[in-house]
Amino acid sequence: MIDNYGRTIDYMRISVTELCNLRCRYCMPEEGIVKRDHAEMMTAEETIDAVKAAVSLGIRKIRVTGGEPLVKRGIVELCHNIASIDGVEELCITTNGTLLPGCAKELRKAGVDRVNISLDTLREDRYREITRVGELGDALAGIEAAFDAGFEKIKINTVLMGGFNDDEIEDFVKLTVDRPLEVRFIELMPIGGGIGFEKARFISCVRVLESVPGLEPLDGGNGTMIDGVAVMYALPGAKGRVGLIRPISCDFCEGCNKIRLTADGMLKPCLHSGAEISVKGKNREEMTEIIRQAILSKPQMRETLDADNPSHAGRNMNSIGG
Image 1 (cartoon, helix red, strand yellow):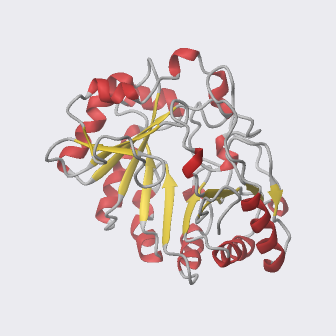
Image 2: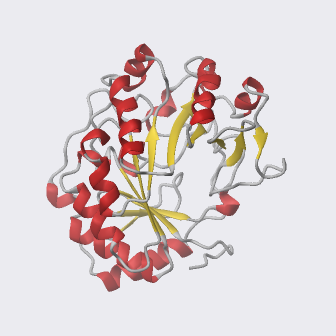
């Protein structure tokens, strides 16, 4: 479906839970969240109906997120049911990876095409600091489990933070040399828990190019977005590649092709807007019309976003979907 600004909207991110087994500082409170009543959240059946409605309007790519989607009971079956819907051309999942050793093969068999694993540091002490409760070894085991399961498109999502992990840029880039990994550096956004971060944490992804000058652009050097929102680079001869996602220093609203569905059934036409439209409790025909209206209500551009101008999303990322 084409929105009012000529953009083809063919991608929907679906959060299946607000819960997570980690407590990443920019994502959710240290104490976690109060588990909401089951009746407030989308059922598996409603989620499937929402996907079918979205597909009827031209959505072709689905990404399952959370919270941490792998803590949701029945996640493998839900992924299988989404992948089985005629018109879904690509099913992806974003996870912190710590639970992948127990289900990566089942997810692959269920029809998940691609796995994105969130990993902000390769140092044990820092991993515990940023996640508050996590063990780095569990996340690294998740990456290995994804490879063992046969996933060919494995991406590492790394939120770049000044004074925290910017001295690890070269270490992350080295991961792409011998394995077909894609490491994506993402600028820290002032949204949810990230709003309280000190200004020094918000640095541009240009720092990556300064730290690893050997990276070569894959788009001829003109800064063109490849694969959605990332500008892609690679080291000469490397099996993998490096992506820069710059929501702060480089607005990419012009090419935005997505809508979001939260675990409690709210459609968000724009991540950084507080506008939400509920599909909870609606039948498929009603959902179809609501999704149509959500696509047509996508704003042309987000408002100014930086350390002094936080997001108007109105939620933590764990309740929107990473």
